[in-house]
Length: 302
Image 1 (cartoon, rainbow, N blue to C red):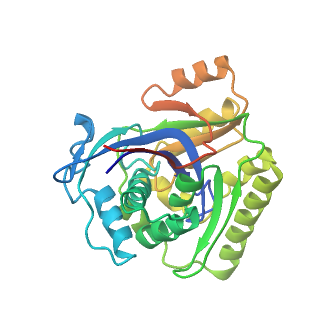
Image 2: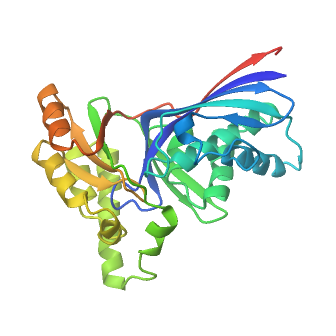
């Protein structure tokens, strides 16, 4: 039997106009210490217990079992999983995707499936429905991905990011993904869609060219989701102004929210102090891009 350690980074989706297709891995993590056991059990911190089940309704287990089913395997040997979670639940930082990716990797290791990262992403997309969070959680860096239910294509960016800071502003309240989806329009007129698509295209081109000023500019021009989701996140205009007044190239709603992120190229101690002072009612963290993604360590003979 194997003892397995799995570490999955938090992610931030969309980056403004890259709706459901662009995401970045950030330097916050969920870590699982997995030991063979008599039955499945997930040990989580007290603060997470209302949100993370301890038994087989846990999303990690369900994702692991889903992965097994893809290979006609209907049984997973039981493990005791101890979770150390640094990713806030339901805040727009990919907490569900960390669980999905962890579950896929757990099945991969327990069953010796020898999955490639592409295989893992395809399974993750089948569970999540879109790749924006699962892709960077697996690959690291910034991922631009497309999935239509059959075809899966993606491009990974990792260069020129060492000096970037992602100032992450996490409100105390939750925004449920279902509610954040419900406020979006069912359709958009052709002219508006062309404009929104063009903004996303420039964002991708700017990422490829490491033109961070342009990346920040495009973050603020999204028309796909932020104009609608702003009503669920009343702090967004104020937070954006504070971040941009103190050096942010741009700011955006992370995923479905309510977390808001400002992109900085270089960030000094004075800027950090001012931002912390002006955003005292929120949890503020200064993150960097994780360019590695999913990490696994296996110890045999347990």
